Amino acid sequence: MQFSRAEPREAQEFVELTLMSGEKFLETLFGLNVEDILRRLYVEASNLFRHECCVFARSEQKIVGMMLGYDHSYAKKNRLRTGKLLIEQLGLLKLFRLIKLDRALGKHEKGEFYLSNFAIYPQYRGKGFGKEMLEYCLDWAKKLGCSTMRLDVEKDNEIAMRLYSKMGFEVERESTIKLANRTFEFLRMCRTI
Image 1 (tube, rainbow, N blue to C red):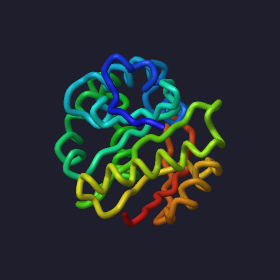
Image 2 (cartoon, helix red, strand yellow):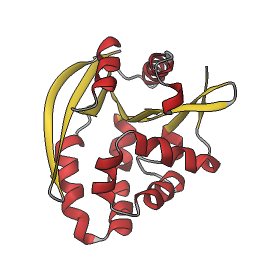
Image 3 (tube, rainbow, N blue to C red):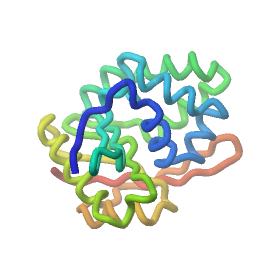
Image 4 (cartoon, rainbow, N blue to C red):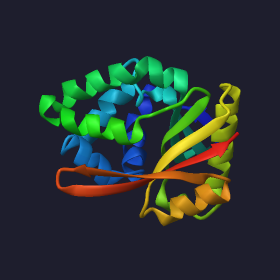
């Protein structure tokens, strides 16, 4: 498997895989224009969805999956700009949703790498690619000087939780977010690098 930083021209793959990592949640959060919003954020400078935070995994020149992540310093530097861009895209009416999300999931600590989104195309699942991708991600975080990796996974995503547990991640806490009359439950998982 090969890994490469995402390029601006790969926006469609980013959108597809990001939606696979939490389609119902992202659609509820961002609304019907979720694909356009993700595509714009992917190419826009200085935000937490930018292509420079994304790595694609490839097998035989085909994209297998994607990892979107960043360390504490990048998050701290670009968090406000991300919020501003989202407000521009979503309007002030959805500001409350963003505040709720930030309170529930948005806390990042110094020395931490946060794995925001992780997805593998269905035809490549169950072949060991997820393990290999997480190993790459842990190495990526280590090279950035991080000592821990954290992620949030929807509580009903049992397949992902099993993979994370096998890779040494442990549950730190549970969070519940209510958006647009829907309830989403997340587990925050952590691993020392």
